[in-house]
Length: 403
Image (tube, rainbow, N blue to C red; front, side, top):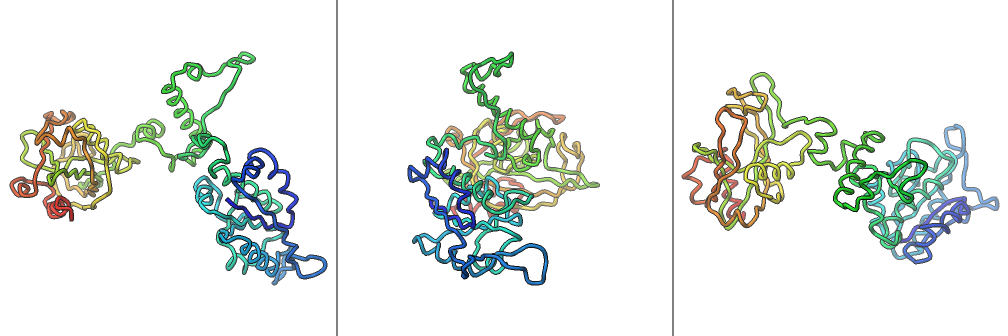
């Protein structure tokens, strides 16, 4: 990967670029860094690159002529056009996602501002992205450029030596890194956690996962809404918010998921034992739960199967009156339900596709406990069954026919 840096202080980069990981990466040829002095494109003997702002005000502004000409000349030095980044407090905040995006470019041109900034015409016509390292001001773009370069270079294959070094770093999956320890195991009466000395890799991974979540919660709770947590982890951290449903007056609003499992032209339906109504397997979505996780959970709970969800096929909105779940806000009352159904393609294990019918889990929580019955149904047999909601049947037939 090639980095070009445009600055009026190229000497500031010599130390950082020759030491440690960046120095070794340059020597090995994993990255190349080219420093360019903006004053080389100045137009007078004083090598002036700034001037007073139009309209008055404090400070100086970097002139457009040197910047435009420098960017054009630097761009022409390689067949790959650079992605042009200007370092400024007004830019997009540099984070893990942006670092990953920038690492996808073959060439970056980092433009370091000074004084009160640069002429707006340069930003509008010669810059692809403005980037900030935080909500504070430093003397120029050189230090931010060094931070960006270091963060991006770490993503380049070969720079870290071991690609495993990138795994489970801070901000990976929205979580901070777990605590680290090394020898000796005890120092001044301070001991390393016993689990790290146990040799039990599963226990160590579990401990590290808990530490990452607890450390993020304590130090950077702002990351938790976007952190990659399982429903169980989020419930333990924030309290179980329950199902995605709410009662307003005599109406219950809720979101449900359904699995559309099709095998050899047949679809998997289920009914409660003794009931004549058939439906697609599934159930209520939990607050904070991803749709695909809800599908996995429901089929695991209903039939003990490890299903693999696919794409969302369609979303259906329903208004109907029926008896509410005993463990929901309706507590078994007959109420109006405003339901949003999300229908997801799913693949089930082969051992379930070999049986025309099979029994599901015993479900508790109602006055009369019941068991689910599952059946593979061909398109021609759908009319003989009371499939709910009936309006999805045409769409279901089309899916079964591969349309």
